[in-house]
Length: 130
Image (tube, rainbow, N blue to C red):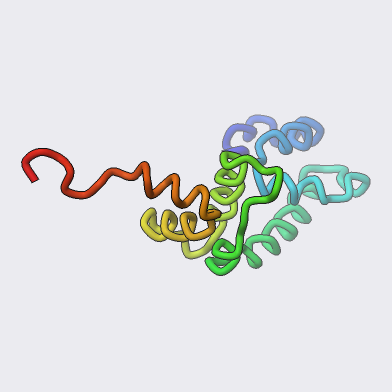
């Protein structure tokens, strides 16, 4: 998407380099921040090490076992934990389906949150006409 948006600026290395970092999120942004900016003179000199570094991180993507081992940090809110967990889950390859995603997440919760979720879940057969 970045290449398509910036195609009209293909000869403007400074602009390409400057806006490239704004197009990145999550692990890609971390990969970019780890590059040595002193070596980046053109977009080509940015893109090649970035792709190599990013591919390395893709190759060591988290797996299901890492997700199962995750826990909420002491001072971390439930929302922050759920977002952190979801960001890591999105990197798992092959991707998880929703049922497996939910099951693994619930199993990582402390008993306090697990009990709250079970108590608030809709009861099977409780609707009229069942």
